[in-house]
Amino acid sequence: MGLLDGRKGLVFGIANDRSIAYHIALSLMEAGAECGFPHLPGEKSERRARKALENGGIANPWMMSCDVSSDEDIDRVFDETKEKFGTIDFIIHSIAYADRTYLKPGSFVDTPRDAFSQALDISAYSLVAVTRRAKEIMPEGGSVIGMSYYGAEKAIPGYNVMGVAKAALEACTRYLAMEMGEFNIRVNTISAGPIRTLSAMAVGGIDEVFDWVQRKSPLRRNIDASEVGRTAVYLVSDLSSAVTGENMYVDAGYSIIGL
Ligand code: NAP
Image (cartoon, rainbow, N blue to C red; front, side, top):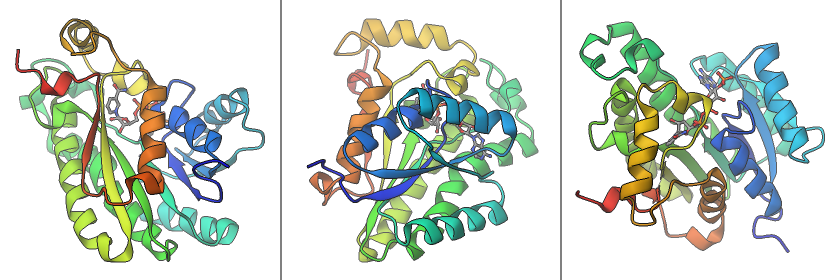
C-alpha cells in the first residue's frame, strides 16, 4: 500500500529532469498518486517535459498546456482535470519567472514596472488563481504546495525581484491557508535550498551560493531535489493533516545559521 494510493492531482512546473517538479512527481507517483502535468504552451516545452517523464518511467504522461498568467488557460486546465479525474487531492505549484536581465547582483533598483509585475503575477499571484479553481474540485479537502526560497526573507545578491515574488508567495500561502482551512484544504510552501535547475541558473552569482551553503549549512552540503520530493509526499499525505500555512525548509539547515 502506498501512502498516496488513490490520490490525484496536478504537478505544475516540469521543464526537464532537473526541475524540482519532476522530482516531486516521481516521489508522489512512487507513493501511489496519479498526476496530470500542465506545462508552458509550446511544442518545445511539451517535448522536454514529456521526455523527462517518460525517461523517468512514467508511460503516457497526461500533459496539458497552461500559461499561468492566462486565466483562460487555467480555466481550461481545471475543466479538463474535472473531466478526467472528477475530483483532485493536491496541487503542486513549482513555477517562477522573472526577466533574467534583473537577476544580476546590483540590478534590483533597475527593475522596471512591467518586469516587477510579471514576476509577481507568474510567481505569486498564480498560486491564488490555481487554488481558487482547485477548491471547486476538492470536495473532501486537499493539499496545495508552492515552492519558495530563503531570498524571500533575506536579501541575496542577484535574487532581487524573485525574492520579492517569493515573499509575496509565502504571504499568499498564509492568507490562502486561513481561508481554505474550513474546506479542509491545506496550503504550504517548501523553502528549498539551491538546486541546479534552469531557473536557478538564471540567477547571477548562483555558484557562490552553492559554495556558501556547502560550507555553512549544518549538514555541510547542498540538497538533492529528491529530498524536496519526499517532503512533498509528507505534505500531500495525511501524515501532515494538521500542517497548514507553513513554510517548510528543506535546505540542509542553512536558514538557521546566523554566521
Ligand atoms: P525549472 O525547472 O526552470 O522550473 C520552473 C518552471 O516554471 C518551468 O517548468 C517553467 O516552464 C515554468 N514556468 C515559467 N513561467 C511559466 C508560466 N507563465 N506558466 C506556466 N509555467 C511557467 O526550475 P525549478 O528550480 O525547478 O523551479 C521550480 C520552483 O522552485 C520555482 O518556484 C523556483 O523559484 C523554486 N525554487 C527553486 C530553487 C532552486 O534552487 N532551483 C530553490 C528554491 C525554490 P518552461 O521551462 O517551459 O519555461
